[in-house]
Length: 185
Picture: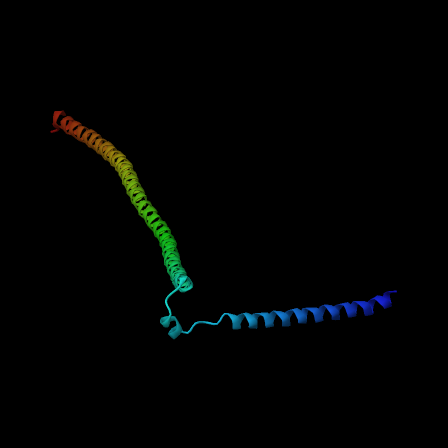
């Protein structure tokens, strides 16, 4: 049964193709006949006869077609112009955002530089205070050292003075003892 159907399908396809070709041929003939029936009036013929409603309709149609074409061109040009303006605006927006970012970064850097300057000044003052305290400590230690040296010198001077005084007193005692002693014959 399947073998019998295959040739039938082939015949059905052929028949369908033949019908389609006939329809196409009939359509082409009908278009050719229609073209013969609707012949265009020559410009000279139009000028000889008075205008009728059909002539006014054709003029209106040609004017409307031209108007539509012009309006379409105008809309396309306007759309392109607007699209370019929008693109420029977005690009300018991107540039503005980039500039705002670079400006913000520069402002942050300036602020950081100011803070760094104040921090450096603060630590310089702290360093001066530390140096001043260190100088005071060093001066105090020097003063203590000088006071010890002075005390040592004063102590030694007092010892030498007392030794000298005792030696002088001893020498004087000996001298006074000699002068008070009886003279020998």
